[in-house]
Amino acid sequence: MAKTRKPTKYETLEVAELNAVAIVWMNRPQVRNAFNETMIAELTAAFRALDKNPAVRAVVLGGHGTAFCAGADLNWMKRMAGFSFEENRRDAMDLAGMLHALHTLSKPTLARVHGPAFAGGMGLLAACDIAVASQDAEFCLSEVKLGLTPATISPYVLAAMGERAAQRYFLTAERFSAAEAYRIGLVQELTLPGELDARINELLGHLVTAGPASLAATKDLIRSVARRPLDAKLIEDTAARIAKARASDEGREGVRSFLEKRKPAWHPEAKASAGGKTTRARPSGKATR
Image (cartoon, rainbow, N blue to C red):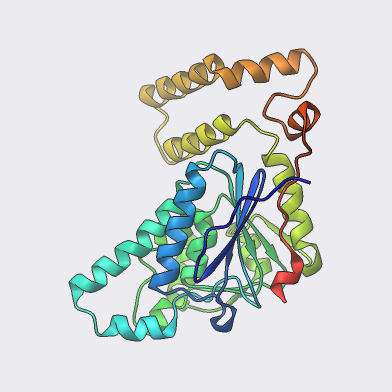
């Protein structure tokens, strides 16, 4: 049986690592995983640590209890109401930095969404590469009803749901269903509540068989190409990227293994046959109850 890494101690999170996969559980179920300054700092630290961990090939973000994340903690918001502009700006920059750390993480990221995903919680799932939601999930961008704006999360949510949908849901602050979230592209897949973990594990099965360096390069490619004009600079840039991939050790091994009809060296089955069974960390449905 493969051994798990010694977990880092967090006050608001649980992070489970087992070989290729890390699962970051938001662990404030008593407040539906609403975040405060401590959770923001711990999420930032966890994302940065996992980004540097070569043993981790994919990251899952989920929430213990009945919710994915209900947004900002009310007590934290009360304290912010007494802050000066500069204090609020610094606090907002911490949140922005956490979302950026998640969005730019070099490993594939999956949001495991169940129950409420409100306000900042929508920013978290939108900052992930893949969002899979249970049919019981519920969504809301509630900021304007509090006299606020969804400013910090807007780059990620706008990219996920599109400007037209944002014009409605940013302004009305109405709640909407998982089916609507799927229709507008905020989440890419829906499952029955009891099948959420199984579907995420299927996706992890695809991700951990891909080349780690090629996954990181592809994530950077998407960020670099999206919404850029198709001009000579972009054509040259994409040509240079594929040339670099072809000339890399990982690229050469991938082509060679394909031609030799075998698993590439990074594939879990290849590692297992070389000695030592490889087992992925799996989300546990029990954790949502």
